[in-house]
Length: 146
Image: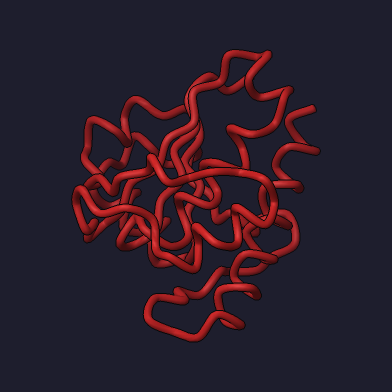
């Protein structure tokens, strides 16, 4: 069983906070004591989640207003048992930065073979589609974990 899941995107304000909090909101994740966090390759350090991500999560009854973006580091990579990224290039980059992480890094859409494009600075309908894909990926991973 994984004890430390890291969800990664670029800025850590749009996609990865949504994935992080969808995992955290699950009772099974909390009961299992799994730590879930997120980070970004080019994080907008200290910034809150994007307004559209906040809005969509609130529609699901999940408040992510406390989220603050943080930079992906080698230490975060090495501490994680499972690293979930949005796009294949991110998986490759993490494996390049920390070769020992190979085998622990997957795209969030791994089980159905899809990537999740960045909605940053795009209209709300793009965020909705992104949200739908993230939710699908998180559900698939939770189904595999339990």
